[in-house]
Length: 102
Image 1 (tube, rainbow, N blue to C red):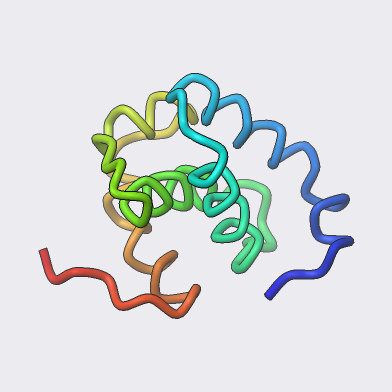
Image 2 (cartoon, rainbow, N blue to C red):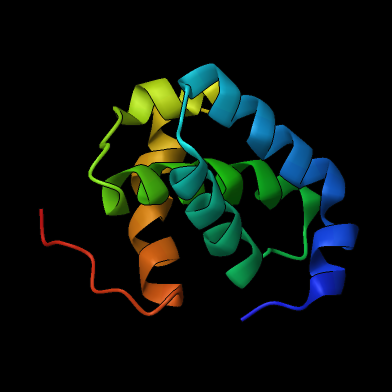
């Protein structure tokens, strides 16, 4: 789990997540799940944070049965679809979920 101070430290990235969630018109529960997934495994390197953010958003949509296309999520965050494709299962695993085999 993450600390409350993580939200403060990651505020610019959480703002970016909120902007992408707005663009995708995600509901509050999916947004909250995406934030929790992102904060559960924030990378040290700022260059990796957009990828983690996009993968967290995509994984949250899957958990909410609102499965958006990887391309749609990637475009909302400003990363490539391949970034989402390569990372979303790791995001689920790091949060304690068993990702599907497909």
